[in-house]
Amino acid sequence: MQEFGSGNENWFDPVVSELAEGVVRVAVDWTILQINPAAVVFTSSLTEPLDETSGAEPVQGRMPSQAQDHNPQPESAFNGKPYDAIFSPESYDLTQALQETLQQQQSLPTRTGNLPARDSQTIPVRIRTVFLPASSNSSSQGGEQAQAIAIIENLHEQSVLQAQLEEQYELLDLIGKSPALRRLQTILPDIAQSDSLVLIEGPRGSGKTLVARILHELSSRKRKPCESVVCGDMPDTLLEPELFGYVKNAFPAATRDKPGAFARAKNGTLILEDLGGISTALQVRLLRSIQERTFEPMGSYSPIQSDVRLIVTSSTPLAESVRRGQFRDDLYYRLNIIRLELPPLLLRREDIPLLVKKLLQRTGARTGKVIRTVAPDAMQMLLNYSYPGNVRELENILEYAMVLTHSPILTPELLPPEVRQASGLGAAMQAQPIPGALQQQPGFPQPAFQAIQPQSGALTPLTAGMGISPLHPSFDTQTGKGQITLSTNDPLEQAEAQALLAILTRHDGNRTTAAEELGIDKSTLWRKMKKLGVEYHTRRGRKS
Image (cartoon, rainbow, N blue to C red):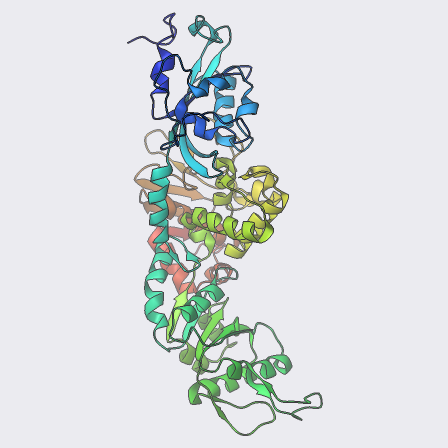
C-alpha cells in the first residue's frame, strides 16, 4: 500500500470517492482541494446544485456516482474554491477541527459535533483530521502548501436510535436520566391515579409545579380544572379570599360573590405552591378544610363540600419548619401522605444536556430563533455551572443566549458572564495550578477540586465528557476542613461529593443551613454525605 508522501497521490482521489465517510481536503490558504461524494451533503445550500441531470436522490448522505469515466464527478466542481464559499458559518465544528489542525501542524484525535446539511437538518458527526506537510505532497494538487484532511463520519442513524432512547427519559415535560428523575418518572403515573394528597419539596426552580401539573395531566381529573395558588409570603388578607372566596358584603369592598380556588377547582386539582410561608392562623383553617373536605367562603357560615385533589409544594423542608415551630405539626402530618423530593440541578448534572436540547427547542419556538448546535466548550461551561436557580435559571441562561445569537451555534460568548467566569462550584473554591499537574483545556472553567492519582501523585482536573470524567477506582481528596473518601469510578458521584463539600465549606459544616440552600431535609443531606464519604470538621473540631 502506498502512503502519503511517496511521490504519487493519483490513487488517492478514486479511493476517497468510494468512502462512506465524508472527506474534505483543504490547503493552508483555505482553498478546497477535494470533497468526496459523501461530504457533499454538508456543503452550503447556497452553492449551485451539483447533479441536475441524473434525477437520482442522494442516498444516506452520498451523491450518486457517475458511471462513465469521462463524466466528471459532480463534487469536483468545488475544487479550487474558497472554503467559506462552500461551507456555511454553521459548519462550526468542521471549521474548528481544520483550523486547529493547520495551526498545530499535526493530526488531531476524533471529536464529535454537528454539521448542517443541505436539507436544513443538523446531522451529528464524528470528525478526525490528518495534517500533511508541504513536503509530503509535492506532486499532488496544492502540493506547494501544507494541507489538512477532515474525515467525517455521519452519525444520523445512531442519533435516531439515541432519540428513541431519549424518549424513555421524558414524561410529558419532565426530562432527565438521573436516578432521581428516572425514579420519579416511574412512580408518577401510579401516584396520579390516586386521589391522595401529595407533598412536593425541593429548591426554587427545580420543577415542583411542573411535577404537580403532570400529576393532574396523568390523573382521571385531567379534563377538570387545575387551579394553582402561589401562597409564599402572601398576607392573610389576600390569601384567604383567594383560597376560599367570599360572599357579597363580607367586607366593604365585596360588592358581589367571588369563588375562591377551592370552588374554581371543583372536581379537579388544586396546587398550593410554597405553602411553608403561610401564617399559623391560616394553617388552622386549611387543616380544617382538609380534614372535613369542606370550605367556607369569607362572610358565610355555610360549609361547602370540597371535591378537589390537593397537591402542595414547598421550597423549604416542612419537617424542618415544624422543628423550628414555624409550621403546625398536625397540618404537616396531614400533608405528608405521599412526599416527593426534587433534587437541585447541581446534583443531577447528567440531565443538563437533555434539558438544554429541550429548552432550546421551546425557547426557539417562542423567540423565532434557532440554535441547532451547542459548541463543546459552551456545553462544558453549562455542565460546570452550579445553578443556584436550578432548571429555571438554566432556561433563563439559554433565553439570554437565544436573544443575543445571530448564528445557530451556541458558543461561550453567548453565555452570561457569571456562567463563563464560574468554576462550576464557585470561584472561592478554585484550586490553584500545581506544577506537574495536567492542565485544563483552554477556554474551559477551572475545576474546583482535583483528585490525586495514586500511581504518580499528579493532580488531574475532574472535567471532561459529561462534566467530570472517571479517573480511577478510588477517589480521595482533602481540602481545608473538608474531606472526601469515595471508592467509585462513577464520575457523577465524584461530582456530587465535590458539590456537597463546596456547600458545606460555604456554611462551615452547618448541615442545617447547607440543607436549606439545597432545598432538602437535613437527614437527606446526612445520608447523602455518608453515602459519598463526605466529612467536614467544624471550627470546634467536630465532625459534620
